[in-house]
Every structure is written in C-alpha cells, then in structure tokens.
Image (tube, rainbow, N blue to C red; front, side):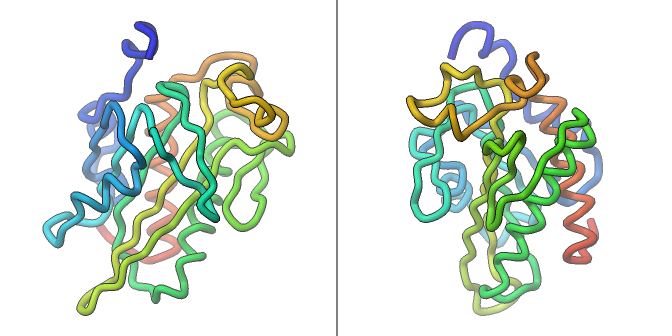
Length: 208
C-alpha cells in the first residue's frame, strides 16, 4: 500500500468503540494481509468465540467469490471482511444469510450516499448495473448447538478504474467512481456493521 493508504488503515479498537454494544462487530480484528478473510476467520474460530466476530483484511491475496471465482481486492481500497455467526438455521438455509448481507449492504449504500443500489441474485450488489459488492457464505456443521457460519463480504470503496484488472472495469464499480470522490472507509465500515447488526436481529432474532 502507498503511504497515504497506510495512514488510512482501518483501526480495530476505534471501530469497536464507535459500534458500542452490539452482536455483529462485538469484536474486530484487522489484518494487513491474508489469503482470504473467510479462511483466516475459520482458522481461529473456536467454541470460545461468541458470534459477531468480524475480521477485516487490508489486502487479500486469494479472495474468493461464488463458484470459486477470484475476488479482486486491491490493497487499502475496499472493505474485505468476514463475520463469524451461529444462526439457528439449517445448512440448507444458508441463502438466508446471503440475502440478509446483500440487503443490508444495499441499504447502507443508499442511506449513506443516496446511491440507488440493487441486488443481483444470488449474492451481488450493484450500482449503475455494475458490481460494487459481493457475499460468500460458508457453513460448517456442528453436532450440538447452532451450526457455524462465516459470511464473507467484499465492497469496492475507493477504487479507480485503473485498480480493476483489464476487462473488469466495465462490469465493476466502486463508491469513489460512483460519487466522484473518496470515501472514509472507517466511517463506512461502522455504518455497514451497524446495519448488518440491526438486520441480523430482525432476520434471526438474536440478542446481545
């Protein structure tokens, strides 16, 4: 990352302080780099972790999308994170988690920036008919208690057209491109997590 990007890295303790007492985002981890945030959070997941742990990475070297597609995650440009959850649903109901996350991201983009966003089923969020965010849900069966779910989310925030690989710029967009200005990633991260938490309670009836 450039010196400017390093200076604007996400700060876990500040995000936690801004969020307060909630479920989704009750604990924040920020890594400089990892292969995939889903892989990283699964490595540390244990029964001692309460649901709501969120792991961000400033850069993913092997980010994944649906159908094993590669998710391009330019360093310091977007929000790349995974959420550890234990919803009381069956493995076959994992699309409910995808719908929850996509709806929440779409709502946050509209509420924060007055940008019209749409959901392209099953897991993409679009602005101006171009992909701005995606969701990847992975669940692990547990014999006793709720199954483990990891919800991976990628949002293009401060990308320029040059940050997208050749050919992808026609199908992808970032908030910065749509708004013609840079976005405070930390503030946007807090807004996204707040809405995810609120809607998680509504979708799955959880409590802190």
